[in-house]
Image (cartoon, rainbow, N blue to C red; front, side, top):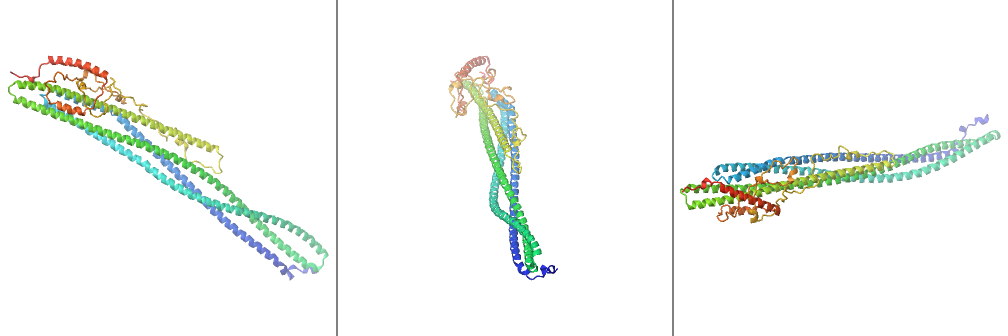
Amino acid sequence: MAFDAAKPSQLAPRAEYATPGYSRSASVRRQITFLQSQLDSVKGEKEDAMKRLQTVKDTAKLSLEKSSQIIGNLEIVMNELKCKSQASFEVMSNAQSSFPDIQQLRDTVSDAMQKLVDARNRVTELESAQVVDRAALQASSHSLTNAGRLNKVSASVSLLNCACLLRPAAVLADLQARREKDVEKLGQLTGELQELKSREAVALKGAESRDSQCQQLLQNLSTTEHALEAVQAESDIRKEKYVHRFPRKHGATYIALEERFEDQSITLRMTRESNGDLQERLITAEAAHALQNIASQLDLTIKGQEGQISASMKVYEERFKNQEELYRSRVDAEEERASRAEYDLATSRAMVQTLQENLTAITAEGQTLREQLSNSSLPDLTALEEAAALRHRNEEEKRFINTLVQTSQAIHEEEVITKGNELRRRENMVKELRAKIHILEASLAKHLKAQAQAQAKMPPPAVENKSMINPSAWTSSCPNSSPPASGPQAPDRDVPATNVESTPATSRAPARSIPAAMLAGPATVTPVPNGNFSDQGNAVLKGLKTPPANRIFALNPAASSAVLQPAFSKLAMESSDDIAEIEIPLATVSRKREAAEASQKAAASANTSKPPPKRLVCPF
């Protein structure tokens, strides 16, 4: 009972043995607080790294969305360009459908020419002929004004095409600027990613070192626990021995041993708590390592998407370059067409001016003849000579008018043939460009399919990455692709323009003097038949053959060369300088000579059978 009365709390030496245990626990607590502060700092760095990774992901998503929007805008622009090309093809079809109107205009021109030929036989009715000629001139002026309006309309259409071409150039500039901005952003993001990677590497190294320290501490704890268990077992055994064997004087040592045991149990608890904290740190380090793996996978996916975006941008740049070249060629063709139309208008105006001059000369000559008839009261030899001179003048006038009609007809036929050939050439060029566009679309679709197959064969990543580009939108079966060529198609190559009589068209050579052999040949007027042109304009490439029944041949110049007057000779020489040389094959020359001889014989027989005109009869 005396031993039980001596409690550990009543003994004085307890304070002396308690000081070293408390100092050790304080050092352990300091280490624990230091480790906790380090853990807090590492957690803060981890949160910062997670935030930066989230910002990088957001920026990458935004860039992908912007690129998808740009691709959508490019598809809209492509559809608009296709609509405009279809509109231009409709304009070409309208131009082809306007060939019957040209045929009607040619009929009106041929009627006017026939009126001019009939006017040379009606010298007494010059006043009524003047009214008819003025009406014909007014009609031709109206046709010229209409042609000028058509030229203005074509020029405005070409200007609209130029304005439409400037729009894709501006879109390209915007795309290039956006691409440069995206490249700069990607460079900044890559720099930030490298910094984050370096920080993560440093953090991983620190975590590995701390993991090694934690393992060492765990080993130390395990050894200390085993030692404590052994010491506790020994202390229990010794306590039992001391209780039974030793008296009260050894109670103080026993109490000291109990206090030491309590201190060791406290330190054991603290080490267990620190072990739990170290396990938590190990778990956080493993989570950081997993996040690093996820970040590396995201980097790989971002690099793959950057490669896809750069490839798509290259493809679109090539497409826009091809479209720019195509529209530039179209603009050049429209400019050439406008210049040709202006040249045709100038030539037609010059022809109208020459016809007006001829008409004024004819009217002046008729006036002089009337004055001479009114002044001559009695017939004499001079009147007879003047009548013969007038007859020869009429023959010279016939020859001159025949040459004018022949040259104008040849020029008109040449212009029609050249226009038809130009239309065929343009249609062939349009077909070739359409074929090239279809080939490019097919090759692009194959390339995209090959890329999709290669991506399908690759192992799937941890996070599924869907492509922002739809490969089906670029295949030829997709309704968004360019439609196949529809409507009337032109032949693959230009058919050479040949006449039925194998006579070549007149060439645009510099003006040369016509030889006498050609002037002596038959000058024909070709009426325009109604069946030479078809709806598709296929007969434009054929030359026009004048039927022999409708031909009007010139008179023989050898019969009247002795008494020719210089009334129309000077005008004929001046007009012959403006007439281009007509190249006629030998076979056609021989045929025309035979026809000319037959027509001269018929004209001579007709002249012998006809009575003399009334205006030349002189009463004696």
